[in-house]
Length: 415
Image (cartoon, rainbow, N blue to C red; front, side, top):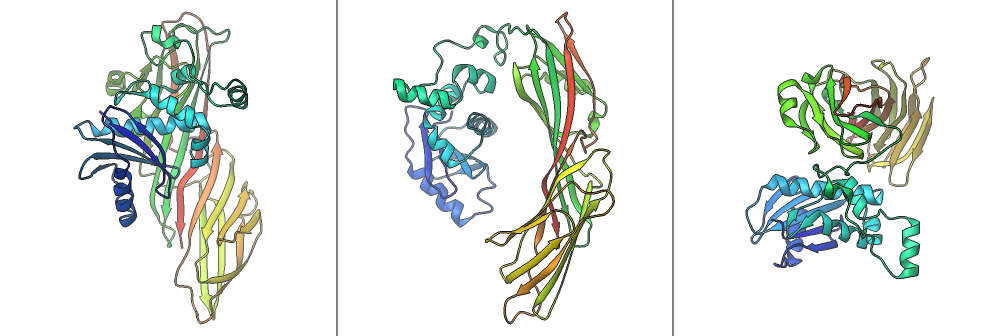
């Protein structure tokens, strides 16, 4: 049973406080947490569960916001962590992003969401589609009406249709003129390449996203061509675990609308779609930089939105960089961004230039790490493929569509 939830900014300020039970948790617990987080910046924030002298603390960090929950009683820690992740996802969906300003501008909605998501310390309604029936997302019209009428509540006067449904995540008997299901494979590639060009780590973190608009209460099954490559799968509550455990088939009654069906990971990939080759040579107070980008393995689809970003070392006084393709921008904080866009087929883009070192320095001793970004529409680089999507229990035909997208995650090249 959770007793309190705090939202903390990246400076330790308490943005929001929600007491969940009759036992009030004092804000001083946030001061204790932040003091330890500052004194142990790396190790402390990597601990999802922390034992303080008076409470057990659970933390989830998202986009500069720390979601902190407190309890004094024994409880399953994964339940608390999963609930905080759900809270972060729901607020992100409602507000269109997670940041301190958007939360402060929508205090009423955030408090109303927490009122519906947890009751007396126990998770209650966490399905986004059901919450949107109960609490209207913020928009310009609702804000104008609240100012004119003086009513700031966004809670609906009627219960959502799911209260009459035998599955809590689905509206009771929805009806559509066109029945359709769209399935998207969305993947992020995390890779680390050392200064010798050797691939140290390469893995995929992916999601199966579904957008379902089907009349009645359908029963769907999704099968994959090669499910054995998947590691660390995590399912939406609608997925039946036994068919997956025995035959690697996703069997489920879908929520109405868009939702995340499954998360997965594919480890130990052998190659990346593009290469980045940096070279730095320094002598006599100057450093010569050369970076080349090109295709390593053709995925069969266009690689676009390619960007290379790196931080110039503090000892660099000035930099003069030019590229054969795209644009190079150097910000005041010494962040350099090379925007390539789409890699041309006839010639690999390159960026060259000279870096001037501080007076008295002959050679560069701190070498930058290059962060790479790209996007590939129409292909899942993990190799995962959907075999078929079947609809049971409903006699009519429906339209189904499949898409795939791969983008760079934490893709870094060391120099």
